[in-house]
Image (cartoon, rainbow, N blue to C red; front, top):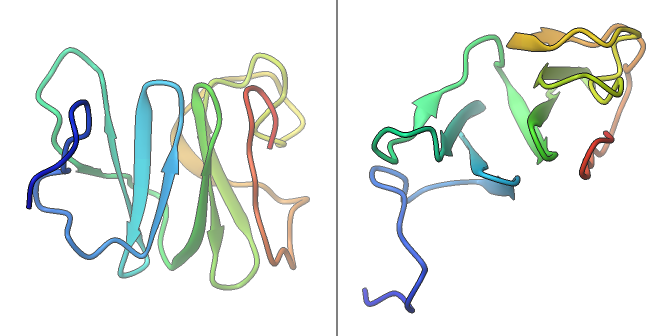
Length: 115
């Protein structure tokens, strides 16, 4: 397949169920797992994002990621200086953790600094 200029395929990902794109990162869902890829000074290779299982939706903000789980829960990580993770704090999270107040969700969206 020939891709247009400026478009690249993500190595090893040819069966993504959903794609979400942030400022300098992208996430895909594959088989309930969330894989991320970003410009971090290293090769652009997808990495399994730990702490997220059974994902059925994913949303990315400027510097954060949230996933909708099969039971309607939400799990987030990343920058949280404006409370964008929804966990009631302004503490950045390096690993995904469930957001207790968000249950029974059917859809998920994120923007610059909101979820």
